[in-house]
Length: 182
Image 1 (tube, rainbow, N blue to C red):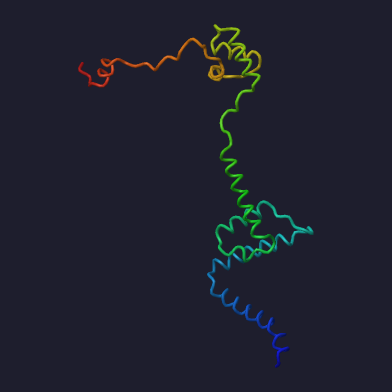
Image 2 (image 1 turned 135 degrees about the vertical axis):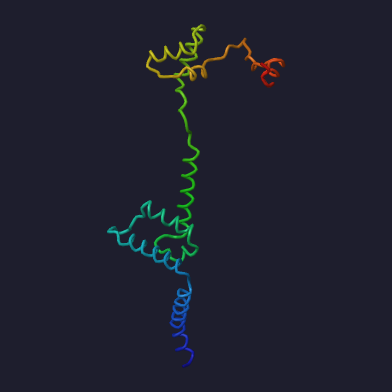
């Protein structure tokens, strides 16, 4: 054969050589890798068999791809219906959703600003009322607020400094630490 016939058979021979080498490598691959590839290919076929012209991926399909990409190193070789970059984007979105859920506010929501202003006004207009009395009056108005929450939003009197924590004298603390002599 001269130059023309050899160059026409070259692509066909390269394809045959690639198929033979691929079959040999597949035979040498571990069984878990073949099982994973089979699972992934079957899942893609199931998606393509859906009765829509352009099948949409469900959240469970995306979750499977995210798990497969974390557990199987050759996941991108078996991927046919989406690009590998798309799977990585799904993975990042999943992490973003997880951390958004993790960092959500927990506990009771803050009081409405109108209610805070009402507590401040009631305590300012009635300086002798305690936090219990203001909580009771708010309950009469239909606002269920605890006395400690009312105390949190009551303005502090400007002239009264906070009382320091109570300290015992040396004699009391040493007497409390010493063993009983009675």
